[in-house]
Image 1: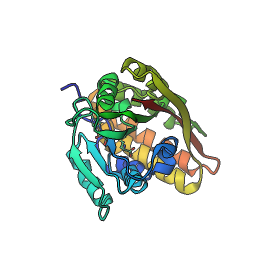
Image 2 (image 1 turned 180 degrees about the vertical axis):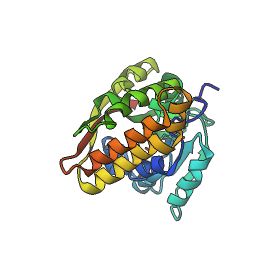
Image 3 (image 1 turned 90 degrees about the vertical axis):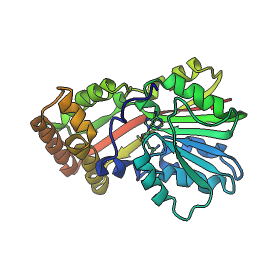
Image 4 (image 1 turned 45 degrees about the vertical axis):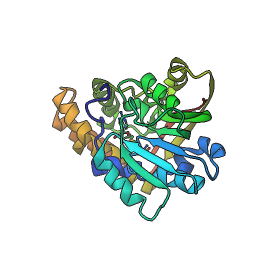
Length: 266
Ligand SMILES: C[S@@+](CC[C@H](N)C(=O)[O-])C[C@H]1O[C@@H](n2cnc3c(N)ncnc32)[C@H](O)[C@@H]1O
């Protein structure tokens, strides 16, 4: 299996709090025009499943199959989906999907390809299980486009450490800019690309985002991998956390990140 040994971020509460904020509207708007009742959808790397739920509402009575390589996060996703009739969950690795060819109308992955060992192979698999005439839809952040203000001491050093941790685990944080290239390498010839951003600036957004990222760098498996890999000490991570909290406390705090998006016609 060529999947990464483990998902870089793990599924600590600090990590899940950012995933659980996500909806189809704020994280898959580029896909909305392609959704309609009756379609079948595969949501790859569904995490805690908040986007999955939105997809299910938009395609009902069509069915959504949601898969993730981590069984533990699927428990959370099942709780999120309680009462929703048209979702089913399974553990699966995107590099080797256990579905026949041409099964789904829409195959979707949000913030997944940046973490996998072989994004081109993953896209080939997603293409294989999409029906002819169906689509593969992918959105990933591009960490090189992350900008923020102000930049308090401590916070300035989180990104270089994150790059080392993510790449050390076989991922690619600058995935957004590479999606078109990966899709072409996977055999797609009809690829429509777009970009969209997230921006956080209100006091509530700053508090939540700083706790998610500052907390992740302090307590999640990102922190353990940073220390184990020799990229940072626990004291460095504590300083980074304090930097994030100083950013959140700044009345003029602002943060943005651009994402790459692709719609690939099968
Ligand atoms: C950043 S989270 C995104 C979750 C969800 N799509 C969202 O945006 O809220 C990435 C998810 O991909 C899963 N993942 C990582 N590698 C995978 C693989 N090889 N196959 C399937 N899922 C994978 C992780 O377990 C994690 O839940």
